[in-house]
Image (cartoon, rainbow over all chains, first blue to last red; front, side, top):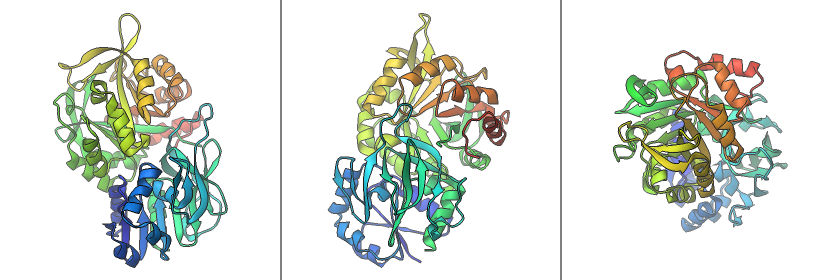
Length: 196
Length: 256
C-alpha cells in the first residue's frame, strides 16, 4: 500500500511520518501531483495558520487536485480544518469538501485558548475509522480554531461547548487532535485509516 | 473535559538527562530516549526537554536527540534551549518536537515571541519564565539560570513579563518558581495563583513537587493546567500511575 503525506509546509509532518513508521508503513513526503493522485491513501498534515496553509496548497497547484481525489484522504489538525469551506482564521476560503466553517473558540471565562492537552473523544456515529475507540478514550489537542459539530461529525469533544473532532464526508476524513501524539488511541485511529 | 497534565521535565546536558538541586550540582539521571520511553509507558501526558546549558553557552539545542525522541515517542514533547531565531525553531520543530519553549532569548529580544507565533502559530510557542521573589517582596525574572555563574536578576517583574509574553503570542506559560525548585516542599501556590489570574493561556507549574498532594494543590488551589516535575519522577519517589490514581480520587481530571 502506498501512503503519501502532502508536504504543505506544516511542522508536524515528521511526527506523522514517524507514527506511520511505527505502524510499519513508510509514507512518502511529497507535493508532486501525480504521486498524490496515484497513492492508495493521502494524508494532509499541518500545524500553523489557515491562510498560509491554503496559500501553500495554491502555490503548489494542489487545490483542485486534492478536491478531486477519490481514495481515502485524512486531514490532521489544520489539515482537517482546510477540508472545510472556510476558516474564520484570516477569513480564508478552504478546500470546501466538508460543509462547515471553522470558528475560533468563543471567549468564555476560564476557557483557555489554545485548547491544549488531552480531552475525551465522544463517538457520534459508527464508522470503521472509529473501530475500537470508545467514550473513555483521550486524544491530544492543540488548536485555537475548531469545526462546529454537524452530520459530518463522527466524534465530538467538549471544550466550552461541543465541536467536531473526527469528521467524514465521502472519502474525506479529518482529525482535529494529533493522532501521532495520542498514544495507543492515536495509533489505533491511524491504523483504522490505513485499513479503510 | 480537558485533563490536567502531568509533565516530567528532563534537563539535558551533553546528551544525557541530568538533575541538580536549585539549578546547581548536576548529576546524570540516564539516557534521553530510555527515560522518555519510561515516562511514556508510565502515563506521562507530555514531556519537556530543557537543554540547560545551550543558552548560557550561546548555542542552540542539539537536534540529533530531538529526532531520536520523535521517532519513538507517541505523546507530545516540548524542547527548550537556546532557541533564538525562527530558523532554529523550525529546525527543532521539523526534527519532530511539538512545541518549542523560549526563555532567556525571549528576555534578550522579546520580539522573538512575535516572530515564532507568526511563523508557527501560538500553539507551538511556550514561554518559560524563571521567577524569584526579591527582598522587596516582588517576583522578578531571572535569565541564564542553566549556568549559576551567569544567572542574572533582571528588573523585569514576573507579572509584567507574563502579560507581555501573552500579548506577543505565547501559547503557554511555564512558571519556574526558583525559590521552591528542587526542595520538594510544594509548588509556590501564592505565586502561581497570582500569575493564573492574569494568564489566559495554559499555565504550567514548575518547581517544588515532593508529594502527590503538591500536585493536587497546584491544580485545585492555583488552577494550573499542568504540573511539571523532575527529581521526584527520576528518583522514583513518585510513580506517575500512583500519582494519577491519587489525583483522580481527589476529583482532579486526569488521563488514566
